[in-house]
Length: 169
Image (cartoon, rainbow, N blue to C red; front, side, top):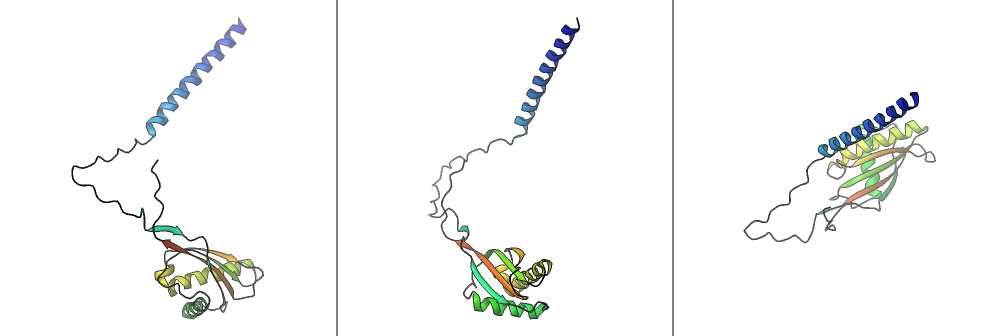
């Protein structure tokens, strides 16, 4: 009798599990957004298709590299002037472009000070050239091998032009 009761419990547990799985499946299917309806063509003339899918292609894969020195204790307008001077010598011709990402490596003793220097340089960079660097993503790093006040940057600019048209799936 005991054997029969145990197998009945297992059988009921199996059905309960199956019912719960079915209920969960129905809830998940109901939670999905409905598919977007395709646009119906209008009766008027269709607009001509642009030769470019988008004007923005993305971030260039090859960075512009710049190395210069600043005074580690400098701040405010002094640091902005030093960053302008260093970038103008190392990476001329970037005006009119927009940076997408900037990796900055600062050298200033311990790792905390190098990261702090890189952070200050990136803030000065955005103030020095707001139209180029205002919306750029910046990352601050420490260069253990660099002397104090040394800054090296990798600047990835945004590229424009015709991008490949991607099929909508």
